[in-house]
Image (cartoon, rainbow, N blue to C red; front, side):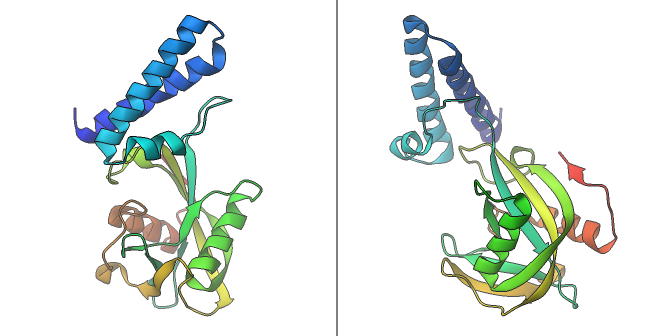
Length: 207
């Protein structure tokens, strides 16, 4: 079993513990599920190179059935067939703009806001291109289970400039990509999304 497969198994172990804590009121079972959750977080910290304290504080107590987190990102292509990208301050690497889905905003509203905040570009959403299950792609291992919504967007205005938490914003061609922030985007995904957008492939890709 690869480290990535091990981490996926531990994530599932934590979910089982959380589900058990939601649906049981037997003191003995609660104690065992709490112990199982504690073990899963320690294993997760080991496999993902995060501290136990960070993971323990990140995962709030579950009061409902646990579900994946949602990452929303936008592909913007200019007239030169170059892709709009932002440089992350956390790792000084590049990604297409986007971020966590916000409660109270639709996915379209989130991607429009994120592109504006990270690159200064105003966009309108053309259509949904893909829904990736992040664990099915070669991203670096991490403790969270994530779905990625990938939208094709059209630039309609604004001025190209990095946002407050970005260190760069620019357009790049597929054959001259910068170093990618692979926690957020992969070259294989960029190639697929670009092909779908440019060739009007209307069927949404779903893992």
